[in-house]
Length: 330
Image (cartoon, rainbow, N blue to C red; front, side, top):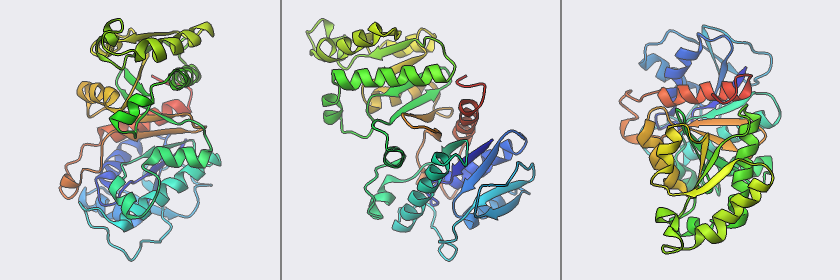
């Protein structure tokens, strides 16, 4: 199984967590993580971690097979004479990391790899490089020509599917419409069914405190969220709500729901990271390929210290394998 693994921003902790993760996965002959990025940055990180692992630089992911001793690195050699400085934003790091994500996306769309797993990029570096894409999700949506790409965070048995992500809070509240909520529920049901969960239990979070207390604190629940749920129920989708956001995650952890549809970025990110920060990972819904990612940033403040925890990357590669294979969502 080939998993395209991008190193993210080369000035952050991405190369470090990938190297530390690869050591774990070289022992698993079923997985072939193909590192996409600057080879000299990866090799330097191997030396820092005193890992005696061979590297092989390739210009194609075809005709390579798993090896317990070798890391395969796709490097376009555009940055062989450039030294990325750890811990700072730069236009060069933005250009490089953006190009690596685009290449990995092309590999997935062409069927050359089974999944994509990404290390963190830095959005400010992408802005310095003048890219319009805010993050990974925008690239996936554009290149796959998908109408709707969504993000789900996972930490152990807690899963939060986000109605929206890269919107300000004021814009996110406006985005909570019957049409958008219904689309998110249907997409969630579709993917969870494909991932091996029969009749998935979908809990839908409310937007307002106490699910509006019968209209005393807003009317979004009655006007937008509840009608969307009822429309989905008519087609046999097992969705309930809107449930108060101060209790739905507790219920989900106790396995009352397979997944929670949340209304905005922080409503889902906070419970996930409180419940299991190190294990938390990201999955995209709405694209034709599997993409997982770490759920942390570039951590420039520790990028030079070699103390980054690779747990999130390890979990992301594991889930990419499961979703691409027979074991599915576990």
